Length: 402
Image 1: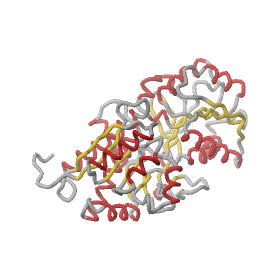
Image 2: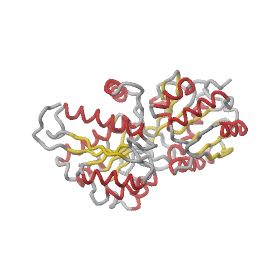
Image 3: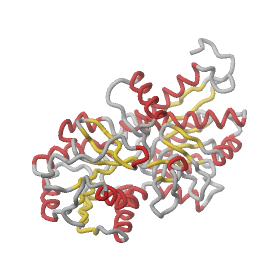
Image 4: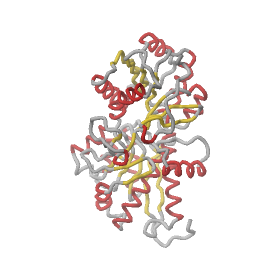
């Protein structure tokens, strides 16, 4: 790191949930990944000779007012770009940035937000979603089930799927997409059970799961600590021989810590995650050296990738204060990061999803999109099991399979 910089810093706003009930782990991951990128960039001489500096402001992801205020704070700080993990109420935040129009690059994973861009591309021209939207969790779920069956590592006891859905819009959207896709598959929805955050006791849900006895179970929730509690209760009284999928939440670092050995056998996925290829593994090594402990596999890489994507845009356009030039460059120049390939030159201005599931926006080749990672917890570690192009391991029998 240089001790004295002659040039003014380039300021990157990073709204980060620090005190709220939701999203603190993901946002710390995002901030850490961004910090690692900033340190590397500055150690290598900065961006066109200027240092990168972070402006961090607190945000409550569940509060529209707080989301607006966090973006307004970035605008007041005259940041050159905004890097954000995700907000549960993204539109008010997008609106708060609509006049300022610096590049707003995030991993929101929400089609409602990218639909807003599609409807008004002029107003939201500066907003880029670096990952595919959450609809792909639902659309790809039956494809994954079929792949696991075809591999011979899972023999379904029946074709039934039981979905347990939480009430936030993100979970509801995933559930609807899954139900739509399952109708076109060889599997069928047997039951949909509603839960409400916070879940104090999973006992009644598990009894319902046992009564339905579906071959495949999808727990469509988002809170790592509550998933850990589910795993412990389920392992004590499981549904025999069911393939259990937990939506996204196990990606958060505290899941493995809280669930311990009870996590083994459960599967989960993310449409945004650090690959286990040469580039991804090099990042994992650097990150773990800088931030020891269990590493989150999602927003660590996303924060890192966004910083480097912006660096490329600023170096190409020459002036970080020219927001339009930077946004036009990002829109027309795909970028391959540690979490895969980001090409946002499409009607939703979001990364294309791999594998191709027949819905928009998807890629037919791994290196033309961002791969959804299907993961199983094996011996206390997350192992990518699908898609096969980037797998680390194969699906193992879960402890509750006979």
